[in-house]
Length: 205
View 1 (cartoon, helix red, strand yellow):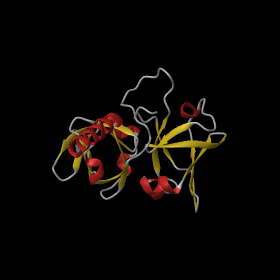
View 2: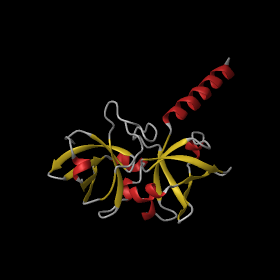
View 3: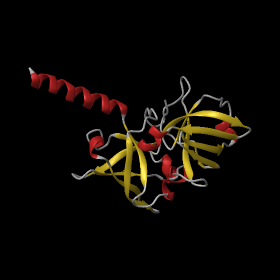
View 4: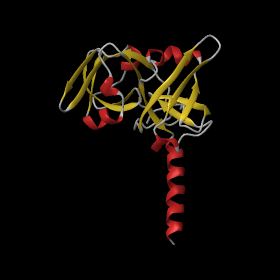
C-alpha cells in the first residue's frame, strides 16, 4: 500500500528488455534506500514492483509482460525520470490517499501547463475507467495522489498541480500524446462495481 506522495524522482540508470519482460535499475538516494530489503514493494511511476536485487545504492526491479501491456513502463528508456515511493509502514501518515500500485491502465496526456500562476494536467481516460473518475474525487497519476478539478462529457479530466508536485515529480518531462499511468480510487471502484452488480441482479429478477 502507498499514499500517493512521491518521495523521489529518479532517472532510470539501466534498462534491459527481454522476452520475460523488463529489468530496471535505479540509484536510490540514502533517504529512500534506508531500510530497503530485497523483496520489498516500491511504486515506480505508480506501478507496484518488487525490489529483486540491491547492489550498494543500485536497486533492480523486474516488470513482466502483463505489467508492460497495462502501464507505460514498456515505453521508458534509460535516463528518463520516474516517480518513486516506498510502501507504507504500519502507522505511517497517509498524506494523499490509499494507492495500491495496481494500475488500471494508461491515460493520454492532452495538455500540461506549468506556469507561475496556474499549473495543471488535462488527460483522456479510457472509456472503461471513466465511470470511476469523479469531480473532486481522488486519482493517482504516475503514482501521485491528485484531485480531479474539472471534467467534460468526452472523457477529458483536469488535475491542478501545486509547485511542490511539479518539483517532486516527472510530470514536466511529459508532452501531449504521452501515456501516463492511472489508478482510480479503490473505494470508488468498490462502490461503483457494487451498485452496478446490485442493479444488474435486481434487473434479472
